[in-house]
Length: 231
Image (cartoon, rainbow, N blue to C red; front, top):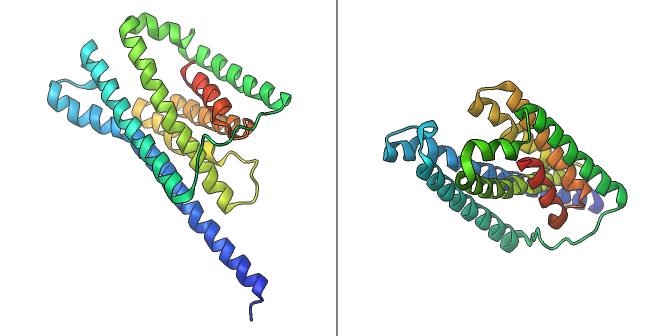
C-alpha cells in the first residue's frame, strides 16, 4: 500500500505535470500568435493587394505592420488575461533586483548579440535598415519589432514555467530552448537559410538566459531582450 506521503507526492507530481502541459500550451499559443503574420502576409494581403509581400509598396508594408501589431497585441492581452485570472500569474509582479555579476552577464549577452548581428548584417543593423527603408518604414518596422518581442517574451515566460514544473533544475533556460526550437528555427524555413535559422536558435537561448539572469523581472529582462533583438 502507498503511504500518505507517497500519495501526496504522487498527487503533487501529477499537478506539476498538468500545469507544465498547460504552460507549454500557453507558450505555443504565443508562438501561434506570431504565426498569424504568415496568414496575413502570404494569404490575405496578396489576395487584397494582388502582389506578394516582397512587392508591397510603402503604404502596404506599413498597413501590414499595423495590422500585425494589432493581432499580436490582442494575442498578448488574451494570454495575460487568461493566465492571471485562471492561474494568478502576473508577470509584472516581480520587482526583484539583480546582483552585479548578473548585470555584467546581461550586458555581455547584449554585446555578444550586437557583435554577431554586426557581422551578419555587415554593419549596424538599425543603420542598415534605416538606409534601406527610409525613416517612415523604419519607424513602423521597429514598432513591429517591439510587439514581436512581447510575444517572444511570453514564450520564454511560459516555456520556463513549463520546464520548471516538469524538472527540478531551475537554472536551465527552458523558455529560451523552447523559443529556439520554434521561433528560432522557423527562420530557417521562412528565410531559406540555415545560418539565419541557427542564429535565431542561438539568440533565443540567449534570451532565455537573460530572463533567468534578470530573475524574471520584466523591467530588467524585457529591455535587454528587446535590445538584443533589434540591435
